[in-house]
Amino acid sequence: MSMKKKSTKQSINTSWIADLVLTKYHEDPTLFRRILPDLAEALDKVYPTRQSHHTSSPFGLTERERTYRLSALESITGKLKCSQVSRQDAIRALEHCAVLTEDDSLPYTIDRRSVMRLIGVVLGKPLTDVTSETTIAIPQDTPSTVVNQISLVRGAVLNLTQDMHLVSIFVIPQKVKEWPRAMRFISLTRRASRSSEDKNTCPEGKYATP
Amino acid sequence: MPLPERVIIDSSAFYALLTENDANHTLADKAYGRLVDREQELWTTSSTMLTIAGFILKRFGIESLRVFNDSTEGIIHVFRVDRTTYRNALELILSGSLGNDFDIEGSLTVVAARNLQAHVFSFRKCFGEAGIATWPR
Image: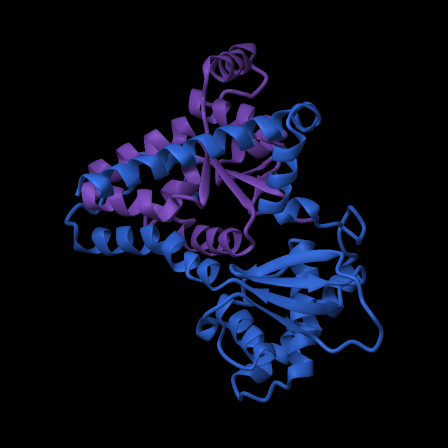
């Protein structure tokens, strides 16, 4: 019993220290890198998004590119309802999703379930059925180098070329399981709010959009 | 616009997530889900964390606070508000550079966002009006 308590306490302390280190790293990365190069390198590995390269314009996609990507994506996801999506189509759709995500313009109409299904088509089985760390390679016409890494669904990292062609998908099952845990506090409080007789809005209701 | 690398969560986003009848609840839910999926660095200030913990405790009880703690552990990093951060936030308020709609907690979020070069996940218009990059756009 006491062992368990000690373990929890250690876990909290570790998290607190990690946050502090990461804060200092972001505040002055140059100084941090000079003083603690090994730790800076380790942080780069833990947070791979920092290593991704924005190959497109720093201003994002043009309206025309955005419309084309979205329209092509919707035509594929529309077929998901009838389960008529080929592996090749699913790969193209994931590439469109990656480009639109990088541009921060993937609409919420392309929901998580659709992206999970597309990944499932490429993997050949549902993402949640993957039990160990796996890399699924996509056959390429020519040798390709991974330049971009984008996570569309937690635990499934898309490895892409410079021009955003999918090279492989790296699946980390432990990370896949983190998403429901991360979202749990929202659904639980929703349930609590239904059972509660207190129907008042939050005290800081002034923040809500009228 | 390209995707922000880091996002700091303001109390208004937490309130929207935790209040089913909040006008922004659905958007907050979807947006937060996406941030978690993208494995982006999520942050909040220790001040916001305490405020939200107090809100959950008062409104939903201790069990929900436990759930919140377990749920955010390892997902949301906490930016510790130290003496310097507090002083900088106070100076921002006193100088009037943020406008009249900011409280000290909002000002602390601005200081943290600047230090981390993060966008602010917020539904408060004052952040945008003060020139702070906000999310969702």
